[in-house]
Amino acid sequence: MTSCAPLTEHVLRTLAQAERGSFSRLDAAAQHDLDYAKSLSPGQRLAALNEILLRAEALGLPPVSREPIVHGPLRL
Image (cartoon, rainbow, N blue to C red; front, top):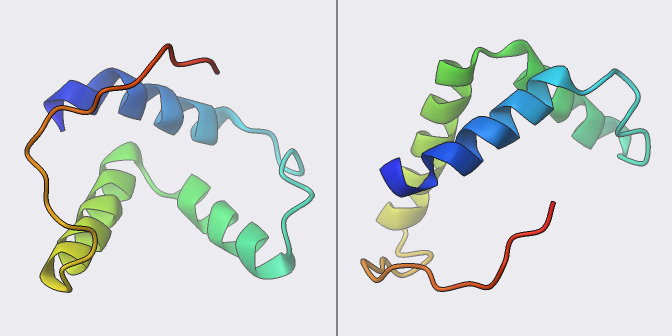
């Protein structure tokens, strides 16, 4: 994840700083999941993401690619 570290840090910082209610269009279950994710430390969030990726890899979804990701400008 070293190549994604700046984006990862930005996403985690944005999630941690989001004000309650700023994701009000989410349904109750999604809001609960978001509140839970916000209560975790950045390390705990990355560990949970790693667990998800390991499970997906074990199921063969998505196929593992070691090729660099090619994309255009990232606009946030």
